[in-house]
Length: 273
Ligand code: GTP
Ligand code: MG
Image 1 (cartoon, rainbow, N blue to C red):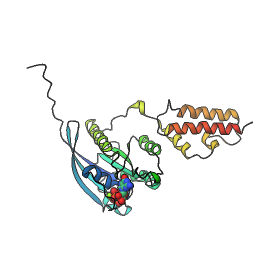
Image 2 (cartoon, helix red, strand yellow):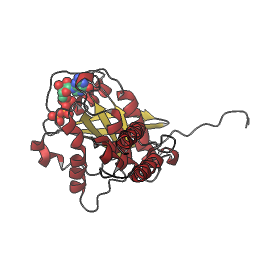
Image 3 (tube, rainbow, N blue to C red):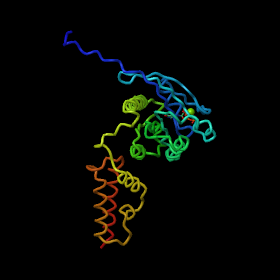
Image 4 (tube, rainbow, N blue to C red):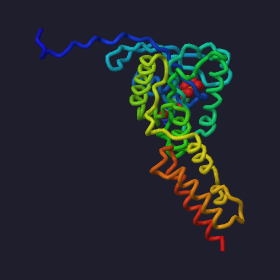
């Protein structure tokens, strides 16, 4: 046999997966799926009634993937219909509208609904979640910024993408990464592959970024009481600076949080004799 011939690669086995969409009504779940599968956008709102089902084939590396998509209705009215469909899922599209804060805040409730319906033996660790921050084309109405959404997603080990079903921005990239991660998971014995540790951050860092983002007051931000001494302020500042310094912390939003802490310290020290 000629040793110079390239080795023939065995084609990967085909795979059948189930994915579902989750998120409040009207955030754009159906439009995201339509944009990817049918390359079109419908601007008229046609609420999903219960569940819409579709099948599509995609290629990931050398594998052909048959995807069963269950597009769920976001309206609370359809809870009874939805709860049949959570089990045996490998991937979840978790969608919110960047112009609707309540749809972002509802993501935890969606996870809770899934967890409850899966029951005590259900395992959400073997599911790939991708968070879609949708309608990014509506820049004027945006009220959930990228770092806030990304921080929420990444602290849970979820993928995060900014998308617009209207313009198509982010949609293909999101689905390609989503499907590739599901294949990785299937090839990894049903466990989520461990993320690259150099790009991870601690819960304390994520919580601190979130806390600082919500603080309006400089004393509060530093975590010291008004009337604290210069030493107390500097000590609190140093602790936060070590936690959030951009060289040390990769949590989304940490750079802004670090700047806010620097400004808070300057403002507070001005008022201390
Ligand atoms: P339910 O089926 O009721 O749960 O809603 P859904 O999440 O499936 O929302 P759907 O995809 O039906 O979209 C709701 C509305 O938002 C429609 O009027 C869409 O045209 C609009 N929409 C969806 N995605 C986008 C987007 O990226 N940008 C803009 N501007 N509008 C969008
Ligand atoms: Mg829908």
